[in-house]
Image (tube, rainbow, N blue to C red; front, side, top):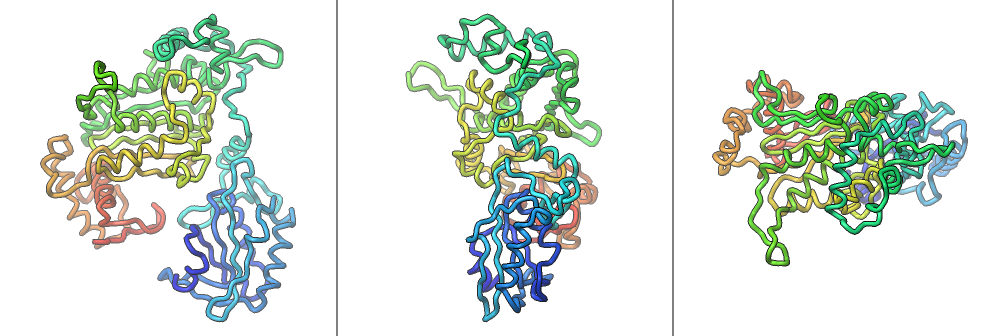
Length: 490
């Protein structure tokens, strides 16, 4: 960005408006203001434009002071935007190449301030940002932001339509046994079942004093049919794709409406964890007492944290449910609902804002997800220590969905071809990185499905190759999934 980068520094998410050079505030600025507020902040530059080659052309403003006055008048007008989130320091006049520009910095907003909308129109005036620019939010996205506004996690509240008969007795008994094993002297164990559920926040009294399951209690211990009566989109799905072929999508599967188990979150977790970690290496190591074997590793902890993260951060009013996929080289964890803190802050650690705090506290009682704010950093630290590619965190605002991918093998190289083959990744999929590079050179806009079709492999095989090439720094994606292109780096 040449000289302008000195002014903008390390800020992310930019929008450039040249129209303001003709005086006044362009109408599109307010859409960008809304989109940056509702995403992860950003910087608007008035008096400059971004050219097709990504360079920035500074035009300058004929009267920067008047532009600033016009902006403040607009941002403080409730008929223009629903709320002014800026301070004086966030709007500055800068000089570049003897030309004046206005720089407006939109901060990252806490969830309780969203959504920010324009023109007094919540439904049609709420915007978000993706790689292609500003887009109007769907009703579903707006509803998700409104649900996230509350300071108190909603899953503490009683479900007034349900009674404790909605809960699965075997699930409660199994959890209580795990709790007793983890914390044998805990005071909660002295209570009968009803009071035990109340103490762990799985049950609460409604406004009439009647005992009801909380939202957390229904999700964690409920019978499947009782859960979907209240959460129609509720769905939990584990899939083993390691032996996938064009005619076989998975060789092992656990899903919530199978009918031969409860279908609730707690039982799903304890059914799925052993399958996820079964093939991970377990070196012989003794605990500090020198007597007991330590049957755990950071890699196993990372996988468990990723599963816990998907379950306690899921928006169970959202679409498509929680889906967990196991491959030879990676695990994929998908959940409805976006991160409630910026992803970069989650990676740094120390901050925790789970969507379902009561569910998290119930898991904590049996030593699941104990390290609040430390789960995501653990995944990154473990990957670095093992020499694996960094975990991938993908958020799709348009789908209201988060995906975390944990890699459990080293990036593809000619030296580890034999090792990968031994892990049952097909030879056809391993042998195609160079062919993939040629395809992308010829047609940078190819999709994963098109790559798979050209190579005669599955879409997941194509994803494996693409992820490996990205991890090696040989390719990168520029733009969105729909309209972007692949850049060959080496």
